[in-house]
Image (cartoon, rainbow, N blue to C red):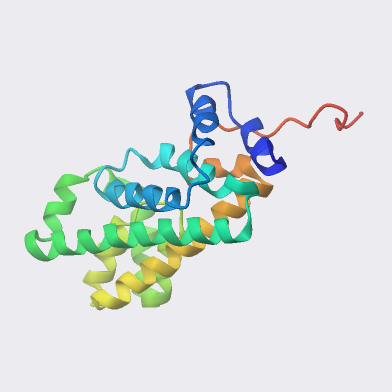
Length: 205
């Protein structure tokens, strides 16, 4: 295993996720793989529960072929595009059926601690606030609703989502290489721990 991949695998608790990542290595280097993960990120707009597994899928694509810069950029842009398309579909749903349809479909999202903070940022800073909220490791639904309620145009909203999610996934790609245990803050809960130093490099106390 190349060094970045080995360090990430070391952060995984023994579980099906570790085996999953090892199996993904066989085809994660394919040119189409980041776009498949991006498509799943789009679908996750309406499922939510895929967030944890998608971290594993995304990281597998980032680390393929030695985590080259081109691969990291492609993975980040493909995932950002996928989530932006999902946001566009969410906007379409709101236009057709109203905000209540989203509130009824995803009640747990809007009871989260991020609701008030997201609203405050978007109300105060408009486009920039929407970029900031979109870059955070939270679902996009509050950002979409608050931006629409603030009167932001659809084009500006989707541009903010694309920019914010590109920032988010770029950060995730860098963490996958240098600090994989911090990926727990991006949706992969309970299966990541701080890496153990390799044999021969343990610090002697």
